[in-house]
Image 1: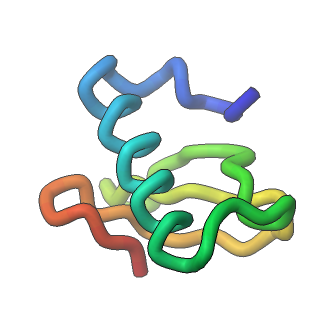
Image 2 (image 1 turned 180 degrees about the horizontal axis):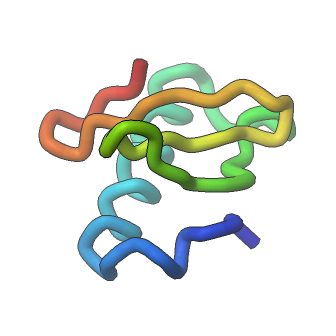
Length: 66
């Protein structure tokens, strides 16, 4: 279960999951530490937190995270 995912619109949910899948594929596949744990916003930016505690901003427009 991804905390707060249900608070995003259906389009945003789909895009977050799509970006995550693409990024994991680019880095050699899924790992336990890189499973999505939570989505949240900070200053209007969409962020995700992974199981290992790291978090990143997601750019829904171009599919990157930073």
